[in-house]
Amino acid sequence: MASAGKCFLVTGAPGVGKTTLIIRVLEALKLSNPNLKIQGFYTREVREGGERIGFEVVTLDGRKAPLASTNISSWESQRWPNVGRYKVDVSSFESLALPELQVKEDSDLFVIDEVGKMELFSSSFFPAILRVLESNIPLLATVPLPKSGCRDIPGVARLKNQTGATIYTVDSSNRDAMKDQIYSNLADLLQTH
Image 1 (cartoon, rainbow, N blue to C red):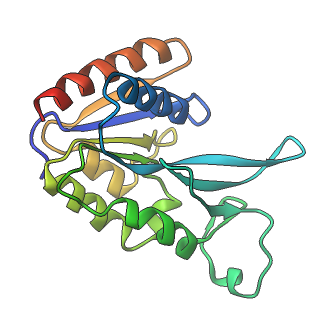
Image 2 (cartoon, helix red, strand yellow):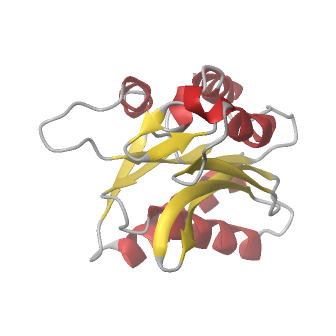
């Protein structure tokens, strides 16, 4: 598994700005070292008329694919898993996200936003994360906070329990400080990588 200090996990309440924080850290890293080879993806809301109707996966080079939606009524979507009111398009997610998690020798950093319930419906997703951890290439990922009184999702618990995993809990009052701290820790690590 990843050696000590190479697994960085950002957690916090829904809507607190975990994805925004990750994007800002990536922008700062690329600015300070434009030659970094960073692989991965982030998720973002899809809105229609001010209402959230789903989520999409976006690669770091801008390619997009649906992750989940409330507006899917195709015959095949009847078999898709639900998270709340959303239908999760596992095959769409896998077609875009899994290639981004292929370990390459010249990779400097992996980014996964998010390791959550929707993404973990893919039976191939968590094994891909484990291969990233085994590669010893640093990982920056977001994970959800467990709901009050509930346990972590098993895959999330396993990531949090990685030897040397650093967990950053973000809230609205510490976002900027967390961005600076994560950036600094990753920049130092990537200089020695």
